[in-house]
Length: 222
Image (cartoon, rainbow, N blue to C red):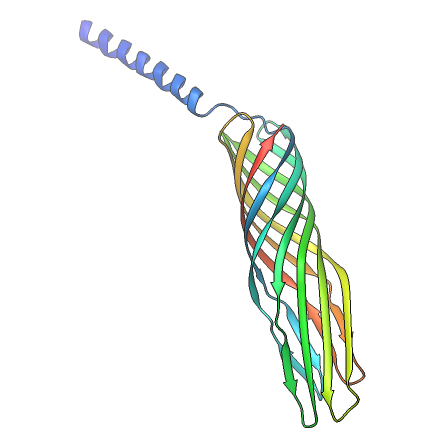
């Protein structure tokens, strides 16, 4: 009996010590409030493009580029459910060197660049201990600088256009709060944008941009 009581007392003491350690190592997190931070990673620019020049030709100016920028947002937590809104702005180094298509008498060259993209999204997540698992969707914007030129027997022509393309973005990720105010996150985001058209009397190019983004970030929770 004495041995049994000693074992029981030891088990209670061990349980209390474990609970205390867990409380210190994994404090309850309340995600409600504003936050701001920085994030960066890689983007895979994968547009669908076509060129009408002596018929329709399909081509692809894929590009893997760095992505870096800032993020702000707000979360509201009720139980384990976390609802929020987030906005971000990122540098996007898309610099397609262009495509040249040689015809019987003329050459058509195409070039497209994009310097930035931004999103405004809703988020819904599930909080577990110090982790937040979330899905997100909303509006996406991206700048587009498109150029087309033709040379040859026909009259040389050049056209360029700078515009901001609208689209939709969606994805998900995970955040981990490692202190009362700081959290890190990993996120995947896919964005598809409206088509951009540009042409000369000889040829017309259509670009339908799509972007895959993988990024890591750190945020300060106010």
